[in-house]
Length: 408
Image (cartoon, rainbow, N blue to C red; front, top):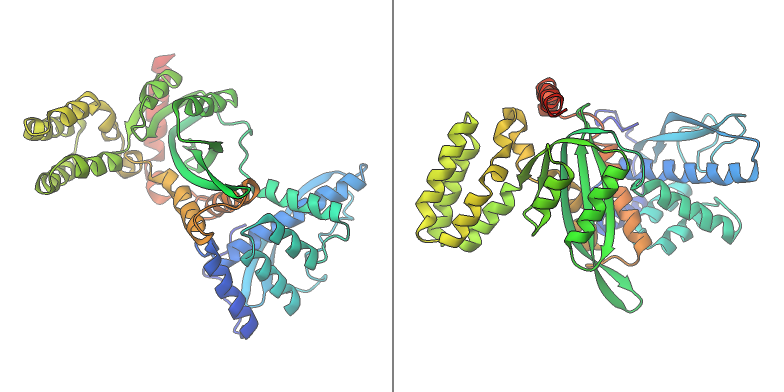
């Protein structure tokens, strides 16, 4: 349950030590998330991990869903999901005493300290130990692993058969490997379902540079998990990926990211020509019909073909893929013309990378950071459909049915 931003906050003052810890938290690279979301994610994840440990010791009991509870961590209101078991005997140790809505000051300090020190898994384990969640090292390891699993993306979960849109992009990061740093690429896939909700479908880190074989494996994995029909596939112009996308989803419109195209224009054209190119492109994006946009695109190519023949030839060859978004409702054109939806995850990861010294300290730390980023989006602003999507949803679903009923 996400926190209500309009919820009143008690006027109880925050201690100087807590203020200092909050400043440390924000400086650690997690400041892109709100404090209440971070605390809610942490407490919910630890509770789920603790329930798993409890059920391992009591095989006769079974999990029985969750209930929502609102708590106070100092002056910060936090909404968490509390796990239950069938016999009702389980109660997470990290909850305050019954009939109390808040934590004592020392527990608040530990919670904030754990979040602030979460650059490494060892620091998180130390925080769990200080919280008194377990007495043995073995149990601590299991709880810490459970916390990571709760936050880690479900790269193997079954998927819906149908998507209105699929967005993919890759991001380079560096991982610490002993006393060296090694390059890795995170392959991200985000889907827009027919219910209008956005979900991260895959977030997979692979060693080395971005390459076509890894993209084939990612897309093949989506199909193996149940995905069959996609109306529009949005990607950048990574070499060879266009043909792969068309082969995996032959009935989808494949849209190449226009932001990447505009960046390329700035690097290929002179400064004055690039400015004119951008102005003409803005007019094309606002075209009232697909035909008008196509004519504008041809005129743009004609204008620069003599001075930049090779680059313009490449644009002309991929015209349909740069203008596919014009087929869709006005409210969705901006979203469907770029990979910005994937950049929502990449952007948060980039902030955490910079604040962690420019690299991730281990694979487990990377998973934890990715889990936090995705949890923040899916349980935050992605939990409800955006207004533009809701306004166009009926039309998008009608287009989907027309497309795939005709294909069948």
